[in-house]
Length: 172
Image (tube, rainbow, N blue to C red; front, side):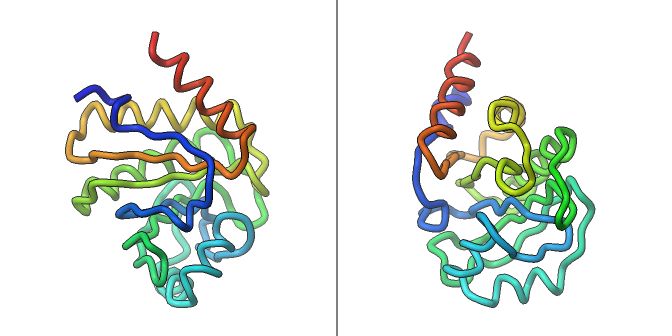
């Protein structure tokens, strides 16, 4: 199956995704502060932070998995693309995306949903984020047919447009 047919891009609220796992754009201390992490904490309940407290900290570029609490998703994969209060660097975005996908495959998950990691408070450029994340998703899906669906749910139309532009350019 062609990798592109397993990828969906849309605008919306990632905490509402009906998927095996949603990805949290995390810091390496696994503290659920603002942005995507704050929305996950608010909707998923305190048990997600409690699990993070037992696991963290992890290295920047790594990923960790917790239960989904009260979310529709069964799990949250915390992709640590930055240090608390820091900025996301390209290599850390690449590794945290790769490790989130690896964790999903190792756990036998069939679907995973990502935000635009690192583009909020961590300041990573949106266009480059789309290029890096979609390249990692492409590489992973080509090697891992067990992962049936990768969604990327973007917060606003600008982000959705950027991801769609990059996705379309990858068809060539």
